[in-house]
Length: 311
Image (cartoon, rainbow, N blue to C red; front, side, top):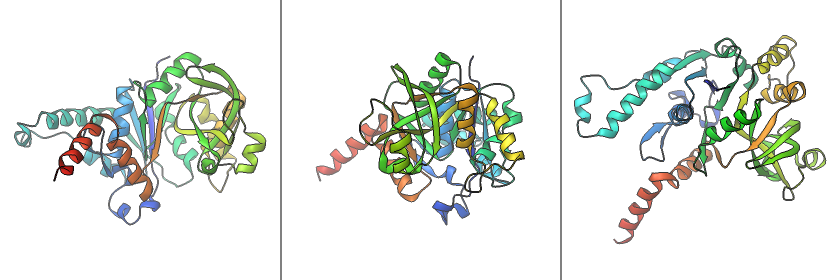
């Protein structure tokens, strides 16, 4: 079954990037992409989804947040195109913005009830089909010829069940991520039949319950920040919302994913790439550096420093 739809969550308040987020949604913060073109973060993420074969994108936003996103995803008007007469890259970007505009639907998360609740807001839009889920403040940089989303979608095509992108993560960082364990079922790419999923465990718990055979000592498998989910996830989330099943006072997606693992069985697939969270000041800087060091932009950056080293 082909995955046609992607949900991107972008409904957070952006408190970690305050006060810049007073006027600009953090997902619209600009980054210079690997192709050397300056884009808001959400565009980099949406482009990767479309390039992977996704046809429709839903962005879950905070109430009133739609206006900021819509104002960006608009191509050049006829009276503006003459300014780009000698800039073919600009005209190409304008066409891409129009394509993205036609592909994107916006849905509000009317209450800040957690990540799981934000995903649930897209239930009717997704309908009865599996979908790709991405984070609006994460940039995904592949280390292979296939993008991170392509790697994940290929895995779903192989296993035909919910697939969670995962990454080997050192013990000192697992407090930041949902962490999983399971039995390896494939080598290329490494894939696991998952048996347990825990949201942001401490190291002691992970050492006792989340070790995976074959991994280096004090290395665990944690979420990469993108998933392909079957619509059963919405049934589970609806039950959690109706019965007020919360963790840390929020409707958690990870809790629902653990239940989905029990009900249907889920696969974890190691993605060959980086997950970068631009939602913090340090993460924003790290994301820009990572983009600058990869792709065509890396060559331009190297030439820039070579020129200036001569002076």
